[in-house]
Image (cartoon, rainbow, N blue to C red):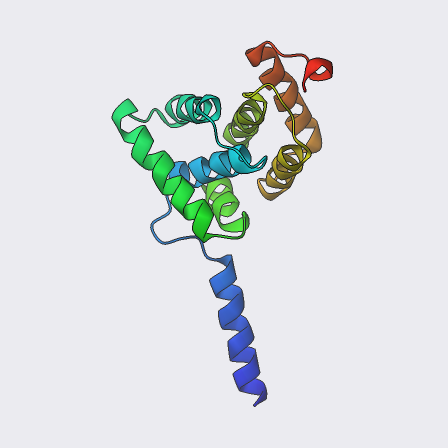
Length: 157
């Protein structure tokens, strides 16, 4: 009985830690970006365009592949209830500086609609921890994102 319980617990742990099958670093990053865009309950064209810019910049992806990558990311996000698998794939495949750059881009997606929702801010902070990006570097990434978008934090709605 005890061995059966141990087996059940270890199988459950391995299932919850696993990423969706065939998840690449760019699809995991796209899922994190889509998750950030959806955190406020809407996924508008500005956020979609920002995600496309991020994917082209960070991974040099072809323009014609972006819509299917984002659609797959939306599907992965809808089928998953956790960030860990996506974040682990990104953390394991990108160096620290690239993860900091991704944090900046997550902030850009969050700010792309000119608003900062508490759910969005909380999500980006959680992702930062899962990517092992320091609070200082995430804060700097946030400031750079605001500068890139020409926004002022005090004037956000």
